[in-house]
Length: 120
Image (cartoon, helix red, strand yellow):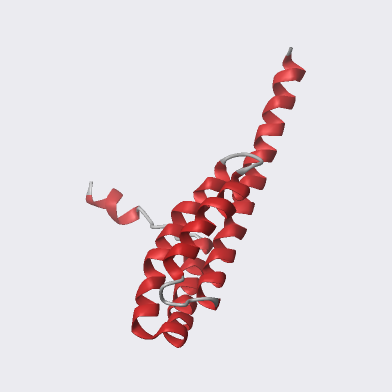
C-alpha cells in the first residue's frame, strides 16, 4: 500500500505554470497601478478568470459568453481601484485559454456528429 502511494506521481500541466506566471505579472502590475489594494484585487479577478475560462468548454459560443459575462464582472471589480493593464492581461490570458478549450470541444463535437452520421 505504501509503495503505491510513493509511486503515484503528481503531474503538473503547463497551463498551471503559465497561470501562476500570469498571477505574478498581474500582482506586479496591480501594485504598480493601484498599490497594495490593486494587487489584492488581482487575486479574486484571477480566480474568476480561472472559472470563467471553463466556459470555453461550451462548443462554438464559449468565448463569446466568457467575453460578455466575465468582461462585465472584471469591469465592475476593477473600476474602483483603476486597474487597467493588470486586468487586461489576466482577462486576455484566460480568454485565450477559453478559445483553446472551445476549439478542442468544437472539433470533438464535429467529429462526434461526423461519426454518428457515418455509422447510420
